[in-house]
Length: 269
Image (cartoon, rainbow, N blue to C red; front, side, top):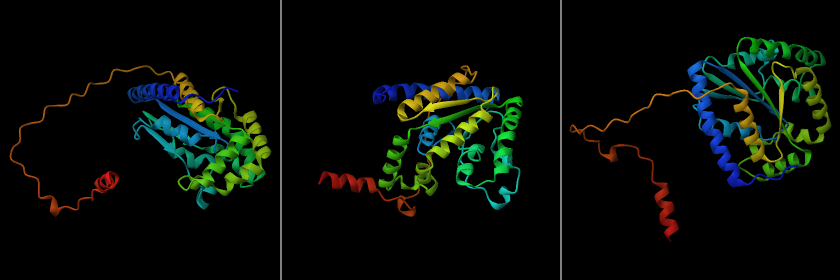
């Protein structure tokens, strides 16, 4: 297995790829393209951090992240795919699904949150649903982030010890350690039924997060038939001469205290 990617090389390539993502965004807006990117994988496999790098310099009105909570009682009574339909992109939009309808084939299957009938129905319907999206012109990309059992456990323990990231650790996450093989079998069955020519699965090896991020973004850019588009040059006009406006006194406003100045004074000793 390849070693850990060097930080400077990673940062240089990530910056280059993010610049291309900005160009891709311009093409999406200009052509009215619709893109859906599915991020799936084991807990702590690096999906969320990769999504952050994808969207870091993109317009949030163009590239939307969708991370749905557990379904409500009403949603549980609907057609399973119904709750995802409102989040599909309109013309000129990119939707990144931080987990998706594949919850049913993964955590719901393993943890017993769905019946056997619901699970089997999902495996039958998912390929048809995705073919409908692609036939309608949506570019659908599906990525599975794969992490080893030892690396996953290491990341879980790191989260448990970090008060800033402890919120990322849920009871379902911990259960994925004790049910590693169950999740493996569920993933294998999911691939058998839903790895279709119109919307294939792409696996991302993610034991090294730096490597997985640049690999995934580079691959995404190669899967979309985008090209650079001419964008209008926005010129900043010269500031006009003052006409006599006077700002009201600062003491009549609720100004945020200068906490930074106090820190600087403390640092000077």
